Length: 383
Ligand code: GLY
Image (cartoon, rainbow, N blue to C red; front, side):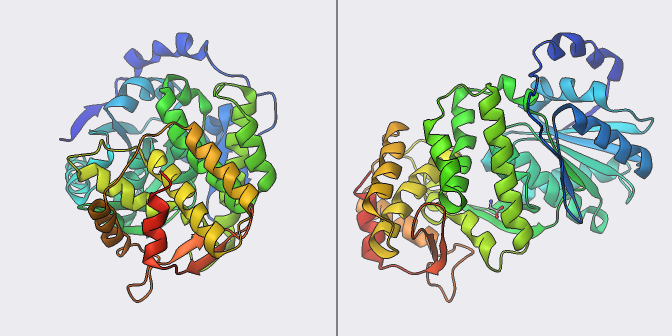
């Protein structure tokens, strides 16, 4: 179901003063990250960049894509900052990975066209990974491409989905099968949107932050495992910033994933299969993306220990981190075989062979690794 609302700027503006009272004050410098074709801005300053862009582009219409959660909690924070005479139209889609599909795109494309979208329109994607993945794809394809801006409102969106220009949708159970690599004009990171986030969602996003440490920076991994769950602390905001810097650095070196960018898929070969499997299984609760990736990171660390020389201490540290998360998962052999079938559709595969990213040690990675199927099956027995 797609809802459309015309913006009610005056009414929404009333939220501003009280909401800003809980604003976090950033004591350290989060410098903008400027790339040749897009930029990432942080905290208060983001809105100066947003308005500068709007002033120079003079869009014919600004569409804001939200789900029911970001419509309630984030849109009222954003709207008062937008300075424009352009028409603002809000398009709301249902939240959840199960709506990240072509049917939702089709609804949004139709709504935007009915509302007069033209090539000078701007789409602002205000939400978590599902909204930025969907919205980036919608904007990249409607009228053969219009400008778009991501404003991620979850930790996962901030450190991963909204960074690096990957946009797309799922096909049935298979994740991100249809999409494009096309960066937004800018990604705006304002951690004030995180204040309303449930703890489960903080953990969901932090898993990708742990992953960044595992593939690229042992010191960062150590900091992450030593940091408690004071998610609204200055320290955690700084860890979010560092995570974005790590991801951006990797993406810059290989925007189209021919080499080093593959490292970002660490934990995702098994993790995506578990996520897809649980989404449609009667015997398992759906997992959040980060939860499934945490399992993938643990099991692929076992494969790294067996095949690429990850040492026992490092593996034990990763195992103990995983067990502290407290997930209770168990799969039958038949279920594992179904997941192996899902892994056989992984985008990194070559000639139908499952290719893994593995670690020789924490902070380093090797790509395009094959391992015997029996070892993948065996890894599940560690859960
Ligand atoms: N989420 C993996 C990537 O952006 O490459």
